[in-house]
Image 1 (cartoon, rainbow, N blue to C red):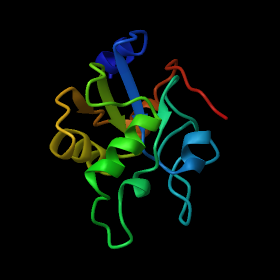
Image 2: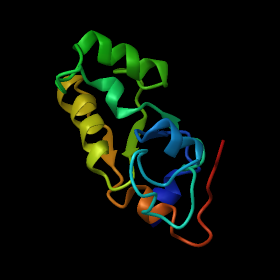
Image 3: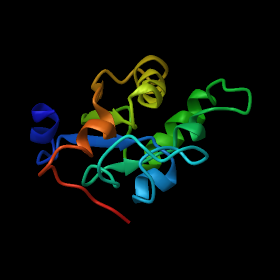
Image 4: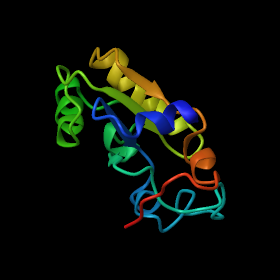
Length: 133
């Protein structure tokens, strides 16, 4: 978590939040439709870009085409030739693994990591910065 906090002040990183729009805006700490639990605070890592993980998938839960993945990621500033390290997170890190796979294995971008503690850890650490809205 300290490593992730240190990346916050670097322009060489992109934090990718793949949670639901409600979680990203700070309205919930867990996905809609269930009990709202998982972290002490609501919000997101400051400066994080948002791309809902469902937008990477077809209705049958297969990935959308490589071309469509490139377009979706480019819309939030993630490009094949971008050169920045991407740190993907969600609430528990399982949704983040989908974005990691799409970025690393389908688009071939090597500089991608998963923040394993994800929002449950970040949102529960006293003093760590949070954005909402």
